[in-house]
Amino acid sequence: MQVKRLIWLCLLDIAILLKSCAALFNTTNSKSTSNTTGWFVDYGSIDTKFSLRTAEEPEEDVCYIRPGRQESITECGFNITAQTFAIVHGWTVAGIFEGWVSQLVSALLEREPSANVIVVDWLKRAQHHYPNAAQHTQLAGQDLAALINWLELDVKYDLSKLHLLGFSLGAHVAGVAGNLAYSKVNRITGMDPAGPHFEYADELRRLSPDDASFVDVVHTNTKGSPDLSIGIQRPVGHVDIYPNGGMDQPGCTLQHTLQMMATFGLQKVGLIMGCAHERSVHLFIDSLVNRERQSVAYRCSSKDAFDRGQCLSCRKNRCNTLGYGAHQQRTTRAAKMYLKTTDRTPFKVFHYQIKVHLRSWKSLTFSQQPLLVSLHGTLGDKENIFVILEELSANHTASFLVTSDVEVGELLRVNLQWESDSVFSFFNTNQFTVHRMRVKAGETQAKIKFTARGADLAQLVQGGEAAVFVRTKENQTNRRHKR
Ligand SMILES: *[C@@H]1O[C@H](CO)[C@@H](O)[C@H](O)[C@H]1NC(C)=O
Ligand SMILES: *[C@@H]1O[C@H](CO)[C@@H](O)[C@H](O)[C@H]1NC(C)=O
Ligand SMILES: *[C@@H]1O[C@H](CO)[C@@H](O)[C@H](O)[C@H]1NC(C)=O
Ligand SMILES: *[C@@H]1O[C@H](CO)[C@@H](O)[C@H](O)[C@H]1NC(C)=O
Ligand SMILES: CC(=O)N[C@H]1CO[C@H](CO)[C@@H](O)[C@@H]1O
Image (cartoon, rainbow, N blue to C red; front, side):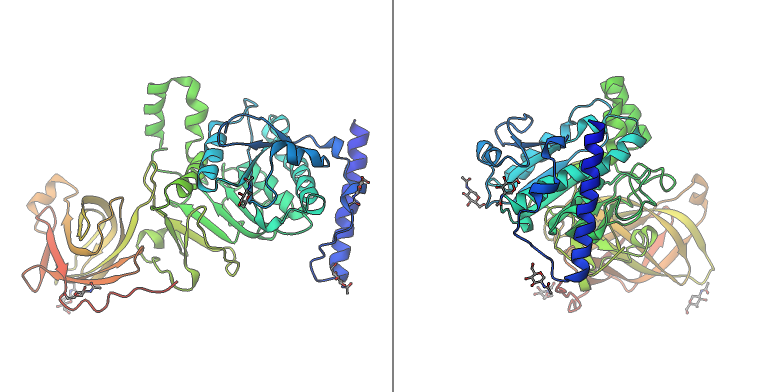
């Protein structure tokens, strides 16, 4: 068995080598119709299973697609003209599919009812100590590539309809497969690709932008030092989105974890610990089923700049939709995108940058100041949004990000209330004068000017009443940029 595998791997290597040589001499992506798969792939040695799932039984393995066996295509009812999704799981301790797999199957089939949804089962190789499982991504990737090449060459399936979705180690399996495929797979979605052993790995061993025509990646659990964090930190696709900064996710904090443990007991610890990691999958599911609530992410130089509200532009591909509806772009490389989300589905929030110029003749400077912001619009209100401002100082413009899970529509009025950060500030009368406020709405790209209600100036008083701002009469600055 071992020898057989070695020979097969050897042949596979030769095949890859030949492919590279062919590419050297022929720049057009050679889409040869000759029977190339027949001679080098020993289909019998493929250890990975490809289960075609159905909407009726999304968690059951009812029929396996078998590379080299044309009859399995008809037996399983694989639709050759429809698009295909292949879901690749990650590392497993229990050796069984986690609950999200069937949830993703159902969501894909709800969105695209005629699609083929294949669950790639490499559980046997994934159920090892992590370093071994990480090594096995190469083998599982080769198996998946064998399926893909067989589908293209023998089944005559059009790979521009193939979308691989890999979670954790599965993202790298998808990357390896995409790299070994003769023709480019249309899309690979990496859901929090695994970090340990991959942060500094060669592009051939991990997910990278070359692995498909479009590679989109969501990073949800990158807290920790590089190469040790659960999710990979570096950008590895054409579009790399870091929800809530990418390190951790709302509803997945330690405090929340302890609460969950108290409620559900220790059996569910694994599930709870994987909360932020698995959030990447649930964000994708959310994008499939909540079509009216698509989350938008914005390109930004850093998480801090994003938190200051400085990156809400959609010009020149600077923003993109999170998840299934992402528009394919290949221009930017290693560009990080950010957005905020809620702690449960639907995850979408609306983003606003608020800018106020604070005046005072006293040279006041405060850091880490609590503020309550209320948004009132044509469709609704969102009151008392809590934000912490890094700095409030005299004759400086404060810029910060405010988000709302409620769609308020066009903004009409904004209230700012400066909370006192200690009981002693009651005795002070720290205050700033504000002439105007500028707001940029990320989701509509509108820029709106506000002035103090019923006055020339508003006072922002520490521990005092809210300062109220209303839309200016001349609202011509409200522009909608085309993407
Ligand atoms: C390159 O490959 C394509 C497709 O297989 C073929 O039509 C073409 O003639 C080849 N060109 C050269 C220079 O070999
Ligand atoms: C491809 O090769 C296999 C195995 O050698 C053979 O059975 C099959 O008929 C070939 N198909 C074509 C289209 O040549
Ligand atoms: C196969 O897929 C095509 C394209 O999505 C669809 O029009 C057709 O109805 C499907 N056929 C079956 C039998 O489901
Ligand atoms: C802020 O600017 C105003 C008007 O230009 C000026 O009178 C005031 O002294 C400045 N305050 C500080 C602290 O520099
Ligand atoms: C884009 C926008 O808000 N336009 C409004 C500007 O103000 C006029 C007059 O109040 C309104 O009619 C526009 O709808």
